[in-house]
Image (cartoon, rainbow, N blue to C red; front, side, top):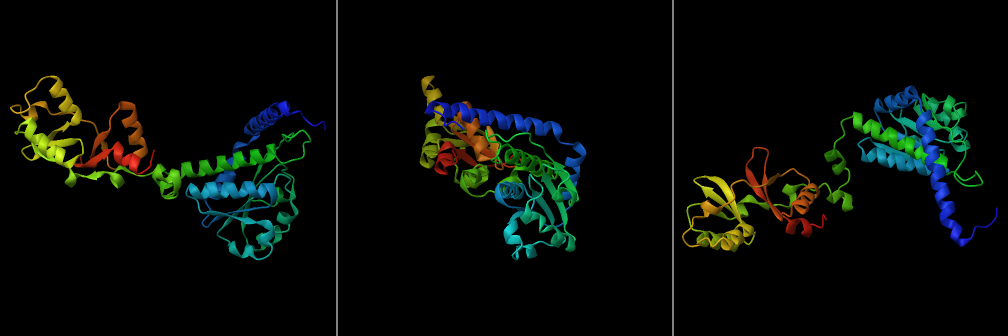
Length: 325
């Protein structure tokens, strides 16, 4: 093969991408509904763990899919086929389901394990490129994918085939989690760390508690109310008439009354308070709340619980301090 010129790299790389996209389109059209449903039902009915067996490039794909499945709420782990034949097979029980990804369907290290798996009455699901292969014929449920050509010019390196297997694995994983009622909050519990974990922090975890907020009698003047509000330094106060909160008064409200030449000494705070104010729920995700605040140019929001009771305040300051955005 002629060595490409430096300015040919992009052209060659794009060709690979186009080839893989075309391969994925062909897989999407050739997947048989009954086969896909059968393999998903087998996995759904598994009482134990879902265990991926693999080796080589297909093994790397299996390892990734196993990780995806676990993050979506289905207990799963990956075992390298070579390690399985040296003791790790003991980790698999009759309650578990084994799923094998092997494009040829004849990978020696995997085929050698089949008699042992059968003797332990372990069910097998597989994804191969040959429905007549040893692994396919030994499976309780099998999904066949066929790739005409790999993406590399020599048609040798596992490229389109591994991408196709990854796609099928993702499709199975998402289908299983969706039908099991897996929720965003469940996903958050499985991802407590890193930037992804921060996206699942709820308002109540970082909000200023209601007991720390300044409460002001609605029947006092603006100037007296501001003395109480300023001491707390949160940029707003909760205005009470009787025992209930009837409104809020913010720094923005103060600027507005000053611009309108309102007498701060004689005007009651209840006359200029904001009666209808925006609020968020204490179980809302902070990341979602921050987007609302950014879009609407709001820098603090009252927090309420499910019974519509004020429980706190969340400000952009707390969100930035928590490094959520």
